[in-house]
Length: 384
Image (cartoon, rainbow, N blue to C red):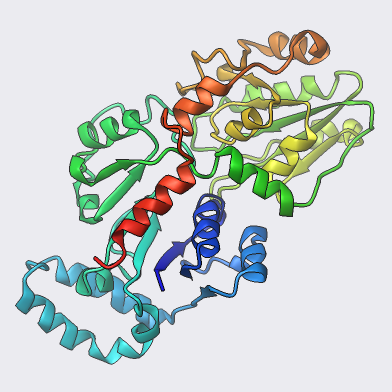
């Protein structure tokens, strides 16, 4: 049986690994999820759906001593030529007391997958030791054009066998600015934002409902605090939105676990009947509920485009340049008045055709589904 071990550290990992896990399970692979850093997978609706519907999915909570061993021996192994047969034999002897944890885990020669990030996390040492393929996998689509203004040496990440990225644009950045071995870089598009996966999400996610039936439903994705937002202008926008007649406004907080920007609610006390602060509802459900989506600094807008929603790109609310800045498939707002105009005259602002934009960034200008591309790549690694 083909097998993959997938390491998950937070909610966003579940979001972007879920379509791949689903495809593998549906294709009768054995999939093992390893929660990292105390992540509680039981609170994630995607993982729960997969566990309820597939017998070939397992979750292993590895003991802390194993994790400490794994990360420590990775650092020690890198001091030597870890590809040397004798060196590997010595480390296999050192690692022998832990074989009881690894016998089932590494049965069937799995491929190992982590999110983008530093090498040397749990099971990376063992993957090197047993010569199993290692893959770093992206969160969504990196939409920022100027995230890296100067070179940063991330050459240590070349120790992964394969480093998946969204497009040729992202590969160029990784090779030229981050110093990652170009031969390790592969473009895959975005399985998470493919139309097929969004349709699957809608099958098992609960619908969302808020506000008056005949109101205009406005959804604003608040940015992550690390994405250089203009905090005061965001506060001002929220206040102005609440004073538009006949709207229902949902403010979706960032799903990242750290450094979340939460605006003050004190100024909204008189409008709470039409304003809802959301932390937990799946973004796709909120987008499906909405008529208009306001966004800047988040790739979640791809869901809105796939669902043919009116999208307002409020670039003046942060200090970062993105792939949306020059796009003609969304409405551009340069100030508060622009946003209010689109909302109040929404009949004059229908959803735009975004097929070319989606084909470029979600499918990498490829007619094949990103999920299938990743699956075929993983399938090619089996038996190696």
